[in-house]
Image 1 (spheres, rainbow over the protein chains, first blue to last red):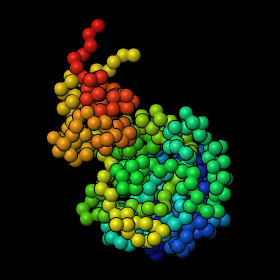
Image 2: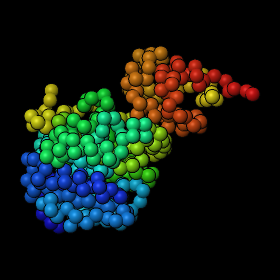
Image 3: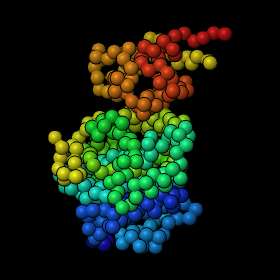
Image 4: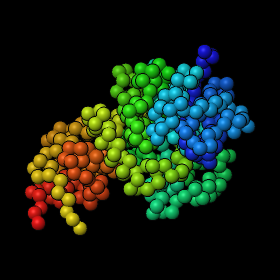
Length: 289
Length: 87
């Protein structure tokens, strides 16, 4: 097996060429600050796209990118994620269940620094969505890819990735200490991913249903773990017609059906993690009291 | 508009109180059934989750919007509890 790295990223893609290009750019060495190119790799796992991405598509970015094709593509990303995790070399592994999420420029460095603070750290980044409101209002507001392109152009992206915060809405509506159902860029040490047994592939629903919340909740329930939320960095969802991010009705249906499936599988209701854990201020590189 | 009957009022109230106190890890006696879900700490996402769990328990399809139209236990039970409608 090849030598290990400080960090690996697993990014799942499915029919999102426009969005994936921006996401990988946002994870590339020219964009990420404080993390040396030799310190990380990006493993894209395509989950059955009609035109899968190729590593050459990203060669100009100077990142160590590998593209895998999931051997068992399905409507759920769980198997793709697990195959991606198995293929990584990083001591710390960050999972992007949705390759349509761009990162802010200090996200990798912050997650590495935060993970170093606890041997069993669960490093959770906060989800944002590009646009003035959460994207499931798109049907009512007319938000679409063209408007998103205009917003990104208005901040000159990618020149200063932190300006994404100016055009985005946080999914954590109760604030950074509020109840947290999931994190789209979730970082655990490889050993902790193994202990967790990765994503539960019984979540076969479209998009995996609530497999991402399930993973986050299970990780936090492991003994001796420490949740660390990253403040000042984040991921930013691009509009791509996803199940839970295109209409209010779609979001509700996905979550309602997901909560029923969760109850049947886990025997308890789906509930967010209410403990705020530690807050790591990425700009100050320190914990917030 | 057809009124959705979920369950008998006392049963529905008891279930909602148990569910919410369980999710929020609160003692039952501390819960005010007249408080809005939002005030209690049940946000819109959790209200939708509650709809799914309620469906599993009562076997009735629950439109999550009902929790926004009747945004407290008292209001929801008044709107959707009671004996089944006849005729």
